Image (cartoon, rainbow, N blue to C red; front, side, top):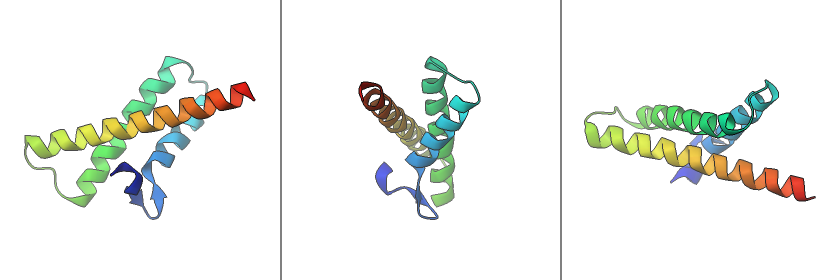
Length: 89
């Protein structure tokens, strides 16, 4: 499960959020942030899955990519929810 995916005690979703926020401070904005969130999620998700076991065969690769997509979607959703809450307050 994504919420249990940690590297040295740090949840991966927080790493994705942190990298997206850092990119925002470097001038990335709008839809590019959502795309970046997905790309970072996929890359980190695949790398995390590979660190757990070698990715051999289509089904394992497919699962790793879907895991990464979910990681990016969760991070993007959290980012949007926090942004909406801050804009309301």
